[in-house]
Amino acid sequence: MQSFTEENYLKIIYHLSLGSTASVQTNAIAEKIQTKPASVTDMIKKLADKQLVNYKKYQGVTLTEKGKLAAINIVRKHRLWEVFLVEKLNFKWDEIHDIAEELEHINSAELIERLDEFLAFPKNDPHGDPIPDKNGNFDNIIFNKLNKLKPGTRGLIMGVNEHSPAFLKHLEKLGLTLGKQIEIIEITEFDGSIELVVETKKISLSREIAKHILIKI
Amino acid sequence: MQSFTEENYLKIIYHLSLGSTASVQTNAIAEKIQTKPASVTDMIKKLADKQLVNYKKYQGVTLTEKGKLAAINIVRKHRLWEVFLVEKLNFKWDEIHDIAEELEHINSAELIERLDEFLAFPKNDPHGDPIPDKNGNFDNIIFNKLNKLKPGTRGLIMGVNEHSPAFLKHLEKLGLTLGKQIEIIEITEFDGSIELVVETKKISLSREIAKHILIKI
DNA sequence: CTATATATTTAGACAAATCTAAAAAAATAT
DNA sequence: ATATTTTTTTAGATTTGTCTAAATATATAG
Ligand SMILES: [Mn+2]
Ligand SMILES: [Mn+2]
Ligand SMILES: [Mn+2]
Ligand SMILES: [Mn+2]
Picture 1: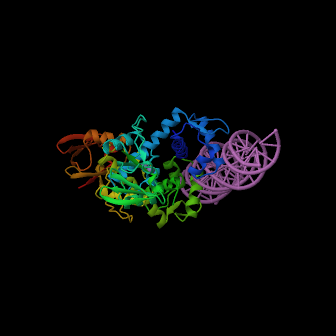
Picture 2 (picture 1 turned 135 degrees about the vertical axis):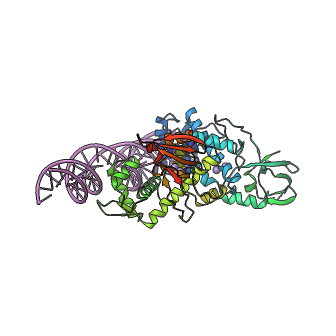
Picture 3 (picture 1 turned 180 degrees about the horizontal axis):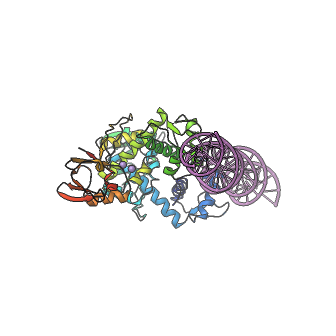
């Protein structure tokens, strides 16, 4: 078993290593975990001793199979609790992340299996992210970022790339929530902002916002 | 806010001080919390600095109002999570305590209020213990212990005094669960064991077991 | 009321996780 | 290829919660 702190490191390393085969750097971990690089080096050594990461001095880290499974299990718990908070306790999608950060460390396999069942085995969390099954497997579908779509394209909102409450609240206000249909009308000359129709409503989005919205065409 | 560890001390002190106005002794805390008396003394000093307990050297501790409220809040969370585990996730009453020991430290007032609502504001946990409301108030009804009842007495099982899985599983096997009606038939001469009828089934109980069962006449 | 036993506290040490300041290695720029 | 910048590691200190061993206070028994 890992400590609360070790679990947080594993999870951060996992997220930082997604979408690239390169090793994860000390400073990157330090920034995400809100700590100093010196502390990260200390913890990395401990994780390496426990065979949870591969580590060579000055070369960053990668997760071992064991470390990756542990990390995915924490992600699984985080996302299942997020579904619970939204589906059962009526929280909004911008209110759940911090609570799930605590709940993800509750240590009971039986609890998680029963929670999964209670929630009817959801495949995705309230932000569209996939929920790994108990063996750590999940569909890794790569969606299009809204800022990459051409005028005339239609699609469905499948997820978001960014989980800050401010961003999520803003999307909610614009009606840009999971499952909504959109159609790109036009890319503005001036600043590249995007005109689109959400269901029937016409709105305009900055590229900065658009690049955090994931679309299935 | 208190640390995980501080919360555990407060909760233990609270439970040890129930049913007596005397102060709680260092050794009693050490035994319950599975630690050494020297460690308890250290922690007591910290809690006293934080105005959570009243402490005079060699005189044991009592909770301050602030400490008592903090303790009751942890008990509230513990019991609400136990209801959740039984009512929603179909755990048995003997399987939930350890999981609730972890969940009780999750720190979100909003979460607990919503959980309370989701569970329809239960008044008692799966062991019959009262659930404090968000202001820390609860009914403190004192029930009779089954070993004190006279032959001919009828009553309802309202709670238990002892929460070990072995004890709870045993009661379950005997059909002695919350809400069941009982009637005392006879107190055996030989060893004082108690003959009773549960609903319609006749059984015999040792005094040791009987004294942990709470009855409303 | 003194001797003994029990309960509690102190002193000093340790492990986990963190920090600051300084040293060392790697990356980059000229 | 050398100098400069950036990244990473080391050394040593700090905080939290724990421990053992020894000292001290309180309770109990003759
Ligand atoms: Mn989240
Ligand atoms: Mn999420
Ligand atoms: Mn319990
Ligand atoms: Mn209970």
